[in-house]
Length: 434
Image (tube, rainbow, N blue to C red; front, side):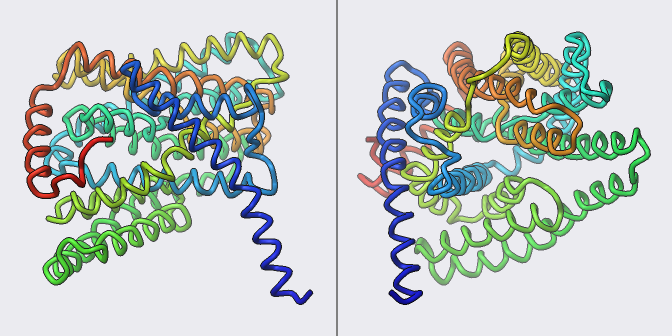
């Protein structure tokens, strides 16, 4: 057997191994998504629950750490995050986003420093000490500062309020939140290096990279926007436009992570913002959402559950995890909600902002992993963060659903009804609900 035939055989074996896990994920995620919708909850709740059932927490029949297919599932999930944020950017009302920008910045600041202080205090009170107690507590606080906007985005999208004032505030604040969180993490790791004698120059560099990213994105975005304006005149409502747009999204995501040290989801959201003012924005969003809804989305949300493994946890860590989870969610609601209230948001909108910011996900896990690999915290702390990710991911969409059922946003509802009527007239049966 020659090398090309061997490579072909290996690739077929690998493909064969991932087919069954994907089939199980798709079927159970869709089934539980429909069950969740019947129970008047966002489908994302059912998709996360599917991952918990299939993963190590319950049945352990889909192992995301399996070397034969685990990396492929994780890669598909990461692409799902990028596409979700790109879709969120496309659906953004830019005028509303600019209007809520200053408020979002203040909400993000409060949403970082209140959980940071709360998490540090909780760790300190429990008395854990692996040799550098102050920085250990500070890093746990940094974990609590992170926000996972992707789950909230999907929940708001299903509820029809993503393009609202509250939705734009949550989106903007969450992006800023993660950037501040990365800078705080850099501070903690740098200062803890050699008892605070680390290289402080890296802090300045990361801040400079963040500023450069936004400067480059604005300049490049203007050029890209003009180019696509020309393209949509030449080829209106053709697949050429969403394909090129998706390519730009991946490029900006790669550049954000590789060259500027910012999460790739920030680059994806920025790409969506660039295209959101095009006449073809809704057309691009529809095409992207087909891929997201059918393939990448279910895998990503199920992966939140698949990554969770609660076996072998010590009793003290379980108690700490439960307290940390409650404090983490309460701190986000208190910090972000109170700041929104100070910025003259209504009580109901302030509460929605706080609840929308309380989910934790991939960023919290990344910060924890960085703390473990840097030797600041022990590996046991990973077990304390996982319940936070699971519980906040499940609870936040449910609470948002309840809040919007009690206090619906009538302005958005009327706007959505008008857009639905226009879309139905334009595309007919193509956009009928399943």
